[in-house]
Length: 466
Image (cartoon, rainbow, N blue to C red):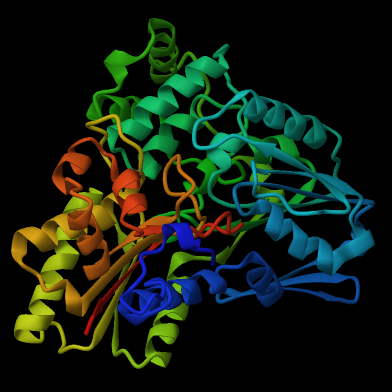
């Protein structure tokens, strides 16, 4: 965990508020959840090499693969945590691996011996994303029935691995991704559209891997851990349809803003002129195993352990928090008020934890992300309601270390942040109206900076009431 001195507010004793008081406790609790999501820990927890057999153990049971059956083992992956996941696999299998390709976000790489690490762009695909998609498809074409592909999958893969279909261009994909990301649509809805415009998403990569055997180790960054949604489900049957993709675009007022050529492709898909994504009865899935190795819920359990170790009775609220970030912030403020006024749902001291992924509907032109906006909106609601922030700290952070298109993981709302805003004459409401949370949180020393964490299991919110 890195929070630089330039980004910290100093208390009266000259100490950083990131290491003292309620803010320091909130940071320690967040860090406990983050450490449990480390792919090195997760892979070591569920994978083992027993003689010639690679064994995978999860809460749902155990499966094994006899490595002696294969002439070649390829290590591949895509997503913001994929390189660290691959590092864990490589540490276990060593020279059993022949080669591979791992695609991750720029700055999220690891030093691998056997697989090439290729850095790509996120959250909007770029030219490197298309190159990554072509490289992955080329590698897949060299696999046969005597090949085992171990695939490390995590969130972010949708943008990092891009292979436009149906004659579409990169600019078409960038345009639709940007419009959807700005619309407030949840990730599942966005990915429904992405899958129908790709040669790798929505089960198409499983088809490309076939007839090889593929073992897909998946780290979830979506609520409910739907494998078909994570990284747009490249190795998972897609239940969605062209019609549903168009419905998403219409529901979020995006369809009529698309270029005519892109709308024509979507309409051709709905009319049956273009094929659907691979469904569950496709024979390619007989040689495909998709295994969940890490989730937001597991990280929340670790955060709960961390909070209780600090002496806080703890309520784990949900791992499926969703909705507009600024509206959810008001819910957390209401919780804090009820704890102080009515001991509801319990008396103070209390720690309330939640996880999931909120959304932000862009109304302005500022800089920020969903977690930063939630922290700033918490400050705003606290001012409106008269909540005593001397007894409260609220932290919202992305476990991947990247909140929106920024270098921050999120932010914190507490008395120190509010005091810094008032000293600097900062207008919180104006910043929210312009979606400009980054600037105020940075200036007030309330910006959470972790650097790339090389993991990705959604977001974590920590509310402490003392």
